[in-house]
Length: 104
Length: 204
Image 1 (cartoon, rainbow over the protein chains, first blue to last red):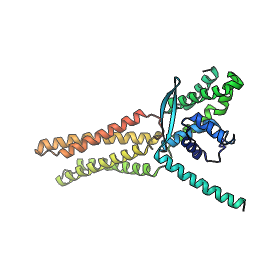
Image 2 (cartoon, each protein chain N blue to C red):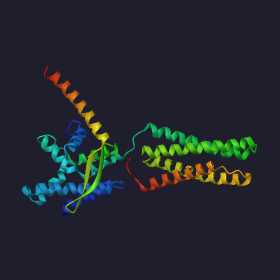
Image 3 (cartoon, rainbow over the protein chains, first blue to last red):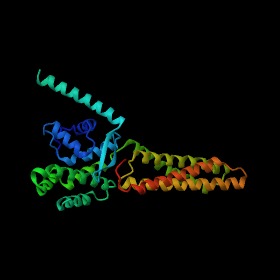
Image 4 (spheres, rainbow over the protein chains, first blue to last red):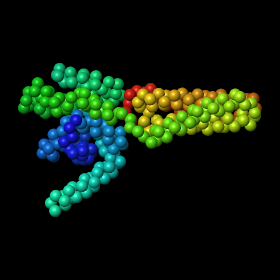
């Protein structure tokens, strides 16, 4: 599937969850809205990322009843918050370096 | 839920094959589609909304492939080491058993028992690492782990029976041996149960 996020989908998904998006559709909507439509990604690509993050211990999930339906709710674990902060630092370093080069 | 969504979910169901998380994935995708259609419905109409929601999600085969990629075991040093240790343990157990049969010397007869317990413990440790690492999926590793379970179970029961029999004849029951044997048997049985319960599962 096409990755419109430059390989940063993991960081974005964890950031979206920290911002309050708790399930797949909400995460996708948050990414779309906050990026001004730039991250109009193949929506199916988010779910494997969620599953992988949970497998890696960065997320926990459970089913929650919502209006007669079941919804899978995600939340960051302590390890997930640590990983998110580390990825944020890496991203800031990367952006600063590129900015310094491109803008002199 | 409309026919178009049901068809999509049926195709995804088929594409996911024997993925142990199939029910969970289908539940999440169904919920996603319902929300997506509800959001798009107001402006587009139900039929067009369903078409667009499906288009945004991607083809069922592509989505299933993403999950299958997740489930595929990757090379893991711990699993490799555990496999080597388990292999050595199995070979050791076989060799020791053969030696005990051909050499009736009392020293040799006692030494193999100690070594056999050590080899059984190594096999148990290898099984524990494989199970904890979650790298026992995939046909070859799965079969190897099932065999390891069988070895550990047999080693456990053999240790219990052998220790009880020895204690009965010598009048000196070594209860630690019974405990070790029971622990081995339980571990092997638990390992087999875990594997049976999670057929086709991804590491978890």
